[in-house]
Amino acid sequence: MTAETEQLTRQSSSFDPAQIPVQTTPADDDHTGLSSALTVLFAVTCALAVANVYFAQPLLDSMAQSLGVAPAVIGIVVTATQAGYAAGLLLIVPLGDRVNRKRLILGQILLSALALAGVGASPTWLVLLGTLIVVGLMAVVVQVVVAYAASLATPSQRGRAVGTVTSGIVLGILLARFASGLIADLAGWRAVYFLSSGLMLILGAVLWRTIPKAASPSTRDSYVALIRSLFKLLVSEPVLRIRGLLALLIFASFSVLWTAMVLPLSAPPLSLSHTAIGLFGLAGVAGALAARRAGRWADQGLGQRVTGLALCVLTLSWVPIGFAQTSLIALVCGVILLDFAVQAVHVTSQSLIFAARPDAQSRLVGAYMCFYSVGSAVGAVAATQVYARWGWVAVCLLGASTSAAALVLWYLTAHVRDPGKGGSR
Image (cartoon, rainbow, N blue to C red; front, top):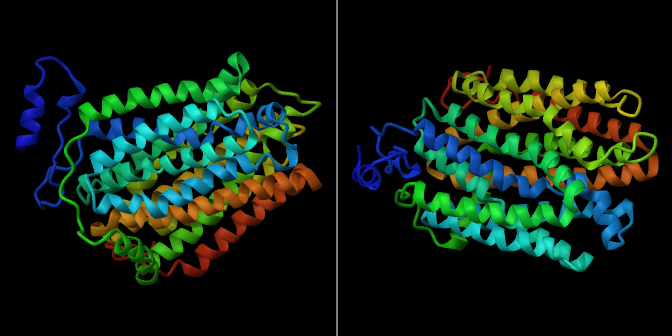
């Protein structure tokens, strides 16, 4: 037990979150790794933080009516948040390798709370877009937490830890849609963001008490050199390039579904409420359940095999999704398959890139998630435009084509071996 852990334990004689045991010097070869309690706390943190990026998707029609925006361009709401997220991945996440991660996490949580309050109070369309960009910028705290968890974990538990934390991310994404729809039906879309602002403040207080003091930064490079190193990693690490392109394609497909789905479901003849539409997010919880096991498989050297099978499932999932306007049961089945597949690939990819360069985990996840953010933003804009012009079937063809492109990319690059596992299968 380290001195830091002993000090935390002495602070309370009864249960207190600060008693969570954790090794604070992950660079040591003999550290015991990441405790289960702290892993769960990180997963909860990611769930609450990432939800802010996805609250808007079931609320697009309400926002459009409230602020006088045409339905054909309402997808810009999602794109604005993703644009902020992409900027944060480039400009903020790499700082996790250079500055105290605890301070970085707490600072982002506080600024998120302020930005969310600004979204709720937005009087105009332009103010809404501006505050949503800041929300996306601060939401990259999720990736700082993921990299921190990976650095605390031992090599043998890294995949499981990343899988568990990523499960929290998936639950946050999916439950965000249900929660925002329910709250909007009860109190309007602005109440969603005011409530989230308050929750982020509470989360910040809990994290201030519980997360351990971060170990010394892994690099002393200047900020400019740190950002430049992102591009060097893209050049030097083929696993990062391949997994990044896969992330772009699978999350474009993911965003196509979740951005456009609200439009036919809220329109006649279905005319579902926000709450009912949000319930479809619960169908995707199977994806979160898959995430942890995918991490374990990656630890066992099966990353490429898991990826190929998941991409086949992703492509086929668009068949039942195509019947959404005539069969809600088919849509539920398709949503389960799609979310399962996307998260299985996502968890596997992160496990593989973390294994490639343990000394640059924050920069690796920042570079990787840039692809994710670009894919999500492009998918959101494309989905609303395609739906406005050609309808739901065209949206499904777009999603299936993107998924098939990811499968082809995997097939062409499957010879690249999993880092540290001695095999690609």
